[in-house]
Amino acid sequence: MRDVQKERDSRNIRIDRVGVCDVNYPIIALDHENKLQNMKA
Image (cartoon, rainbow, N blue to C red; front, side, top):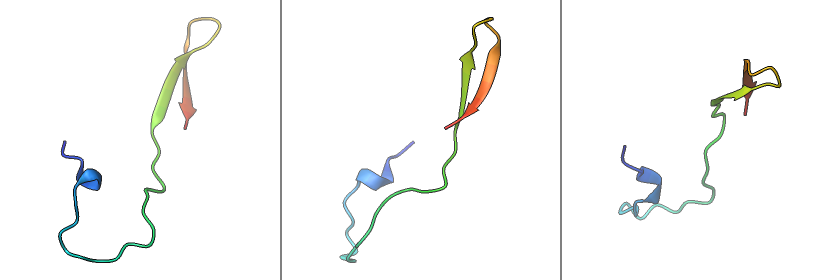
């Protein structure tokens, strides 16, 4: 997948703030009993 955030902007538009918000991704980890636990990050 192309990383468009790293590319140069050729439109000459001033940018005051950048970033990404409201992105969730799942994390699955093993607990002490080697069972899968779903977590939020």
